[in-house]
Image 1 (cartoon, one colour):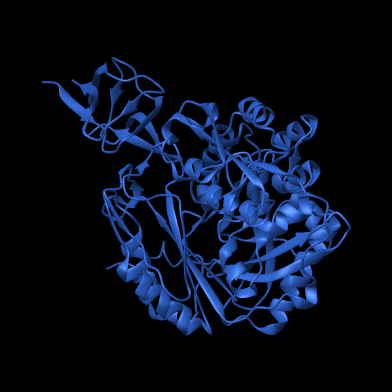
Image 2: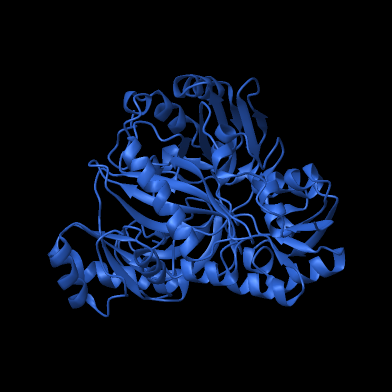
Length: 448
Length: 71
C-alpha cells in the first residue's frame, strides 16, 4: 500500500476520498484553485498544493500542475474522484509515465468506454443488450434519417465522444431530423471537440437502473447490486436508491449478469458502473459505463455495509478485493438526494453566492456528504452540487421517511437550492410506491 | 434610445455572439455566460442594433451587470 495519496478533485468527493485514505492510515494531499483557498477539502488534507487560477482548465484540469503537485508532495498515487480528469485516459497514462498509481481502471478501459460507439460495440460483443440504433457514428442527416426510419421514432442523437447527457438531442419525427442533426453535431463539436454523433431509439417511460461493479488485478470481478436513478433532470440524477424498487428477480438477475459479463469482457479493474435503461416490459439496454467512482456510491455503501473508497485504494495497491461475491448483500434500503445550488424560481439556473446559514440534519440512518459549510463561497466555476443527503432504513419506507424528515430540517440561506423540489419528489405518491421513470421531472410530475 | 442588456445571472463570459452593429431580434443571444458548467445565453429583450458590447470572453459578470447596449 502507498503512504501518500493526492486527491485530484474538490468539494464533497475530495472530502470523502480523504476520509477513506485516513481510514487506512494514508497521508493525503489536496489540490486547490485560487477560488478554493478556504475550501473544506483543503483543511481536511494533511497537505494542500495550489494549482492555479479558478477556471478548471487552469486548476483541476491542469495535468502538468497536478503531476508537479504529486512530485513535490511525495504522493505515490492519485485519486481522480468523479468529473474533472477521472475519465480522461490521457491523464491516467500521464500518471503512469510519472511513476504514479492512478486509482481507477486502466487507460485502455477508460478510453474504450469513453468512446460511446466503441463501448456499444464492445458490450454488444460481450452479449450485453444495447439500445437499438447505430454502433458507428452516422455520416450525415440522411443516414441518420434512414436509421431512424428503421428503428422507429422518437430517436435520440448522441455525441460519440461525450457522455453525461451533454449535447443529446431528441427527435420526435422525420421532419425535425435535419435541424436536430445540425444541432447535435454542433453541440458535440463544442463540448467534446468531436462532432461525430450516433442514433439510438429513445425509450419512453423507462427506468434508469445501474449496476456497481468492482474488479481487482487478479482477475476477480464482482457486482455490488443495482441502484435506481430514474429521477433525473436534464439527464442529471437527482435521487438514487438501492435496491431498485419493484424490480422483478428475473430482470435484476439479467442486469447483474450482463454487468459482470461486460466488465469481464474488458478486463475491468477497480470501481465502475454500467448504466442501463429498463423498459416497462422488463427488457433492459446498456447505456454507458462510468469508469470511476459514482456520485451516488454512498447508497451502495449504506445497503452493503462496504466501503468503496478503501476498496479502491486496496485494489489500486494490487491487493485482492476485500469482499467476495457471496458476502455482498443488500440489507434494508438506502436513498440519496443531491442538493444543487440552482434556483427553482428561475428554471433551475445556477445560483452562485455565499452560504450565510447552513443547518444539516443528523441522526440515526442519516449520512451527509457535504463540500460546503457556513461562509462557503459557491463559485461559478464548478459543478453546482453542494451536498448529498443519504438515509438508510430497515426497508424503503423507513429510508424514505427518514429522508423526508431530514429534508424538512435542512436549512440553507445565501444561495437558492433544489431542496424544495427534492421535498416534493420525496412526498410524491408515485415515488412512495416506487413507480418511477426517467421523464417524470420533464413531464411536470413534481410541479406545484 | 439605448437600452441596457443586463446579465440575469452571475457567470463567466463564455462567448460574445453578437458584435457592434449587428441587427438582433428579440430573444437572440448577445453573449453566452458559463456558470457551474452550464451555458446560459443572455438574450436581447427586443429587436434592435447592438450599440456597444461591454464585456469580453473570460470576464466574470455579476447578476444585474450591463453586458451590452441595444440601440
